[in-house]
Image (cartoon, rainbow, N blue to C red; front, side, top):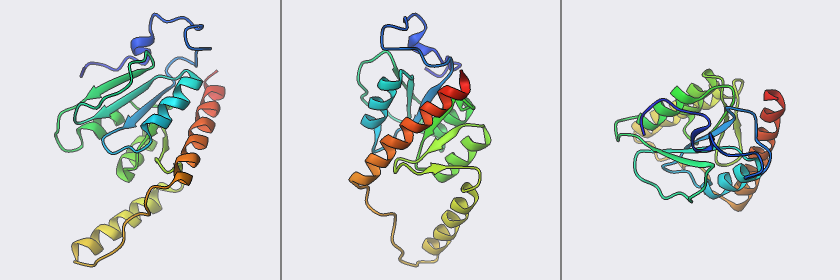
Length: 176
């Protein structure tokens, strides 16, 4: 469970006609899963594109039994799931997270990063996101009552599906 990541994972022995055409070796989705509201959508797009998904969490989460899906349960140490994801993220990884600091670390590792709302984190946008996060944390620490993010909406789910589909298509072209 905590060994070296094998991008093929449970797919090593499968044939291209088992689930459709094989995507380029190493292309994968890594999910910061503990509070991810779009796991079902991730599975749907991954199955369509035939891309393996690794669900990373601090506790056991139920996932469908499918050859493209695997689960990694890390310790409950602070940032253990984040550390595992960063360690295994590379230019052929799509990381799904709402954690701005994890997104920053994954971008530095070369990964493509998408928030559950469908908003991509990019090298040009992450600095501002980290700064806003820090300002909001300072305001909360000072006792200011501030609003949080907008509630997760149906439009976010739709935007996420579209953005993940586009990212996987683009990465597959680049990797081929």
